[in-house]
Structure formats: C-alpha cells, structure tokens
Image (cartoon, rainbow, N blue to C red; front, top):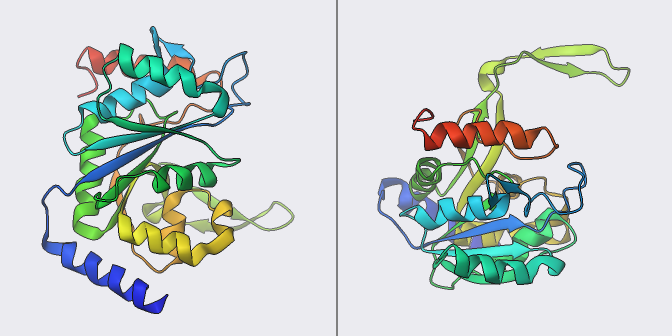
Length: 254
C-alpha cells in the first residue's frame, strides 16, 4: 500500500504544472430516497419547470467541455426512467447507468467502478445540486488537474461556535477558515482509488468523497462556488432552486 500511495502522490506532484484537460468521467449520484422532501416520487425525479432535478444536473455535465463521459447511479426502481430521459434529452455523454448502493458512499463506489479505465480524473456530484453551473464544474475540474483533488465549497458567512457536551459554547471558531463542502468533487482517479483502498470497509462512513482523500493524507483544494450551488434536501428548497435556475436562464446569475 505504501508503494501505491507514493506513486499516487508522485502523480499529483507532477500535475502541479499541468493545466491541460485530462480525460474526465462524471459520476452523478441520484439514488437517494429523499425522505426529508416527502411526496410520492423521489426528489431526483421531481420536476422543476418541467425537467426532473436529476436531469437538470446531468444536462449541465453534458454541456461542460471538460466532461468526457457520465455515469448515472440511480435507485434500482428508477433505472428504467433514465433510459427514456437519455433519449429524450439527447444525453450522449451518458455511458452507463448503474444501480446505487445502500448508502451514498456505496453508490459513489459503484459509480467509480463503472468509470472508463482510460479516464484520468473522476468528478462526483450529488444530482440534487441541480443549480450547479457548467462554469463551476469546469473551475473545480481544472483545480483538480493542477492539485490532484478539488471540491466545490462556499465560505461561511456565519460566526461558528463549538459546543461542549452540555450545549454551551466552548469556543468561537475563526470563520475565515470555515468552508461548507459542496459537490462537484474532483479527484485524480488513482488518488481516489488509493483512498478507497486505504479506507477499507470504513469508506461507508464517509460523509463526502473529499474526506476519503483527506484521511489518506492527500491535500484537497477548496474552490469557491457561492451560495447558489445548494443541495435540495427539504421541500422548501425546490422553490429556492427554481428561482436560482430562472435567474440564470435570464442571465441574472452571471
């Protein structure tokens, strides 16, 4: 393992001066149940202005120049819907549709195992973040081409408090160094492979993909993507995302 880790670190270091586009595969995670949203259908298939949330995300990656292929990771009972959507929306970059796992980390791993062997970088994105822009995807990808690993994030605008076990403030944390992680998260494929191997069965406890890289000792570059790249989690989030999308379509979000 030490030899593999050293090799991956050496590749990352070599990329520090390389700003070119390497073959990049996007893994779009749309297998979540979305229980906090409610309703009879999953949040991924819920429509915003006539287009399902998941498809809005996939379309952004379809149109992004640095993305070469797309792997869709969907719930088993929804796999057939994506075959229809791919044809309807002409999603030519979608190479495979694979079944999701029992948790987010397992779904990400399933998607990773389906990536083209020739790909050098992988992009992992929560399909529920359908307000992501093509510019944000490319910006994070190019940061990863340079540093080996990069994630979309937003600087904290709130004062952050650390609490003790009784719920009292134990410390005020300098918010200049606090970021809220988002997706897409982009990794050198070999780096992510090493991170998964090193995590072993514990990978299922990772709350995001960057934490796997961090636990393996890799540095992850934060890329400011602002407040609009939100993940639909609750019912009220749909209306907020709709406004963001409509503003972007009118050119107000540029």
